[in-house]
Length: 276
Image 1 (tube, one colour):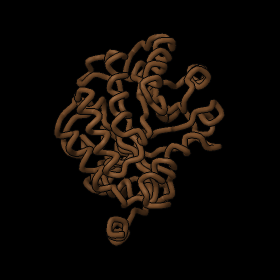
Image 2 (cartoon, helix red, strand yellow):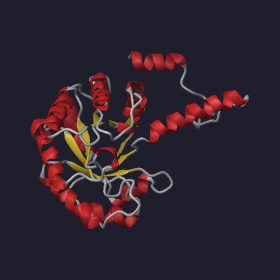
Image 3 (cartoon, helix red, strand yellow):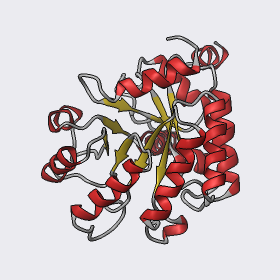
């Protein structure tokens, strides 16, 4: 792929309109991003939970430290991946429209092809006012019009009883009118709900993969255009490390979490990965 940021952005937009949905794995550091890109994935995203937790911070709290870690990762990825990358910026880290616009501009300058902006308020404070969220989206798109802005709608995310889909659709309409390029509704798992969203949202629909509930093939049949892994890979890696350590302490063989007969990347493999 060309190293031109303009080409990367164009290519990333096009991936949302291909024959098959974009399967977007989410990385939390340079090594995980390089490994995923090296495995041939068409694009790589970042996970806000993974980036924040890897630096010792909780996710979704609008912390300046999490913003700094996110921006530092974006800068380190610039020019190192053989595919486009998009960056999860929580809800803009608590910024006002001017601050979110500044962050979007910094990401574009760092070579990012897209960003993910959620409408949850920091610290579990509910949902952002949709008018205010539209202002954030509009400001980001005005500053960095080439970025694929994925508007995340959290009406179904970590709630016991989600509102009617009409609420989600109203937010989607507002965010698309403000300039969003795609809509992301994590927490939706039922085929019938996904089908309604695909039919009613006039933009690429992004769904968060739910193990045991989704298959990529079925989501493709429903018309989903982007399937994200979110923090799944990061949490899986943590669990694998913990399982291996506990097995060693117990004097048993570490579990085969890799599906390769217990083989893991060698020291030199990782050296080559990050040294290329």
